[in-house]
Length: 278
Ligand SMILES: Nc1ncnc2c1ncn2[C@@H]1O[C@H](COP(=O)(O)OP(=O)(O)O)[C@@H](O)[C@H]1O
Ligand SMILES: [Mg+2]
Figure 1 (cartoon, rainbow, N blue to C red):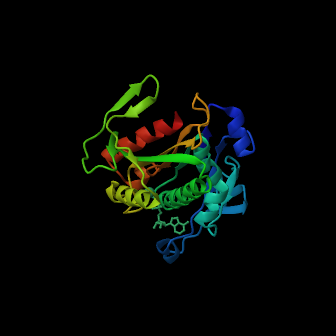
Figure 2: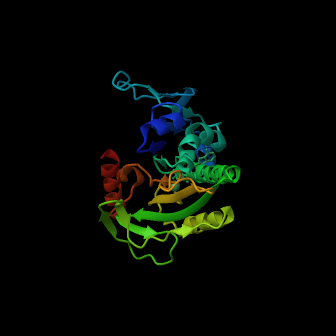
Figure 3: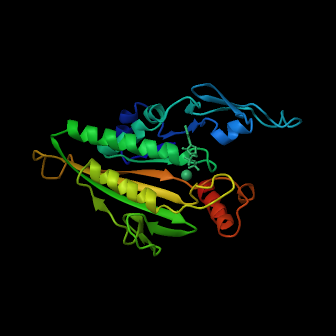
């Protein structure tokens, strides 16, 4: 679910307490009212904190597929988002305050609980980041926030009411940048909450047979944190840190045929798969 990237391997390893920098978790959501009503049952069993078992392999094909899969973490239907965050994302999210870039993203088919989980994880991360700042009064922190949506190949600013697609530029130093993407300097946690609700309202909503309300767009929320010691720390600016954490909520991963989508959506799904497999 999350990945931390850093120029300084040792620092990153020390923070994570281990050398692994990619953590993959699986979360199974509970059956919803509709599924319970039609007598559906879950196809998956979480047998322990790292193993998930497919209960109904197609007869005859049983020997062809493994039925048990192991991940860094597996969260069953009774596990709340707080625990998913603490065991699966907290470490990755908090690395940003120590100057390490990180990304947390949710991947899965429509209605599997990506937005539900990412919304909670973003909220818990923000609360922990602000808590950390409060406890480190010896440093000066500046937080900036930007938000974009990628829908059918077009990048749109979720903090702007103007829906004109933004251009991508290649910067030799910074890599790919989104031209004219608004970056708000945050006043406080309430300001960030306000911006997050603007993003949720702006996000494109499409319709599929799997979930009428599920979004057909990718969303990337980016929080950039700069900090430096309040007391002069040396002429070279040592002690100054800058990093960002990305919260990525991907559009549904299902095949277009499964969602009975056509045209635009079919195109979107194909690009998405290319993107994820590359
Ligand atoms: N762990 C969960 N517990 C309870 N309800 C959930 C959980 N995960 C998802 N849901 C509910 O299931 C529905 C689909 O979830 P959503 O996050 O919108 O899926 P996705 O973004 O993957 O399409 C929503 O109504 C959501 O509130
Ligand atoms: Mg969603």
